[in-house]
Length: 636
Image (cartoon, rainbow, N blue to C red):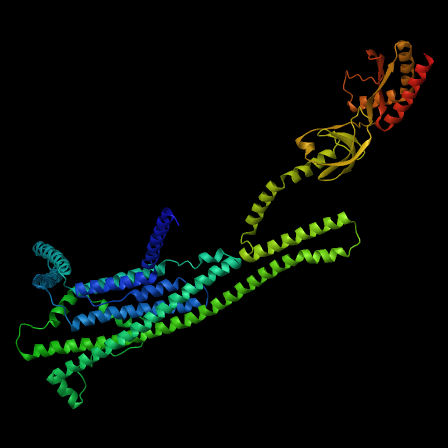
């Protein structure tokens, strides 16, 4: 291997490795892993609880792959359960923040205090506007102008307080606070996306639906294999995440039990059997009514979220034990609710894994059906190829028993062999690519292709109509086509066959060769027909007179004999030529014989031209030569 070849091979290997790395990095699995890691890093950086939306995205993606009536109910159930599980995750994140409020920075704490002050001022202004509205409704005409001015001032102050609340809330979000509102905004975006997806009709037509035959079956089999891999990956992810949630649930339960034991009052109540303080917390609900557990926390406004964080955030203004006990009780209740939501999420993910398993079973059945159809198509193709291989041997044995001419046997064998090959190739092509879906379009394209390929045959067929017309030819006519002269012995729809003869100046005997022309010469070229209505033609008689004879006397005797022999033909030829001219005025036809006397080597040559029928040409020429010999003998 030369240096250039080695360099080219190394470059190809590098490019191949780069392409493989690109395929791996752009694969759906790698993209999903990167998205999960990015979400985890973003959540850790912003102190947000991890909310995994990949399960819902995967369910939506797999729902687009459901193309049969058996798959679509499972796909819809998977999307609903994944959506419900995501709503539970949002609710669990909010309860997690209530139980474990994030530690705010000094800037965030200052903004939070400003936000609480603005909210109190807004509430006060709102009450003042309501009071003045009621007073305006009951005041007299004399007091209304003063009350109206106070009402306008209070309303302006309320609008200003609203702007301050919005500004403080925005500043708090940028400073890393008000995590409740962030989660609520994420849930609102998810709900908006879900509503838009429900309003948009999903296309169920698969791009592989236009493919037919073995090629389409192979593509469908590959698509089903890819779908099974996606379903297996989704099922594995749902099972693993359910196990992970179960592990986290045990940890949360242990922390909750420890928290209950750390509060003396709660421990005493549990010892007395009075029940846990967390009884007001929502009990575990079944997963059937979707979004039931997530609706209430998501509906809380941003101001109440900040108030909840401030209330659950530990120290209040009082230093007694009651506020601390109340705060701990709220945290334990939030943990208890979070534990309940975690149980519902585990149940939802296990149900989702079961649905993916059922879906995979259906797709496996479809894959087996496609494999069976592929094997059937391959069997047909192999059988057709085997029949084509043995067709020649079978034809030789079958036609060898027929008692027909050798040339006809070879022709029949060739025709049957080509026909079988065409039929076999058509069967194989139909099995490979299938029947055309748009039959009209395919017939139009096939017709256009056949028109181009069979142009000569179509022109020949049209030429046959021309030859059958008034100015055409008939069997038995003497014609000249493309320089070949002969008698028409066969006039078919596509071909004209001549029995070739010599030139008209020669003897005109057949040469024994059959010349075949396509009838396209009737429209694309020209031809000569020497057979008129009476098949009249001009013939010539040549006689050489020696110098010792009188040429004028011999010429007179020969002209007399020719005129007598062709007198009847002259009259008939002139009449038929006049009828053939369609009665045109001024047309003059003369069939009288003409004679010419001219010197020649060894004597004088006498040339006589006369009209005769084509069929009587040779016989008349023989009689005239005999008469010329007698005239020479008489004038010796």
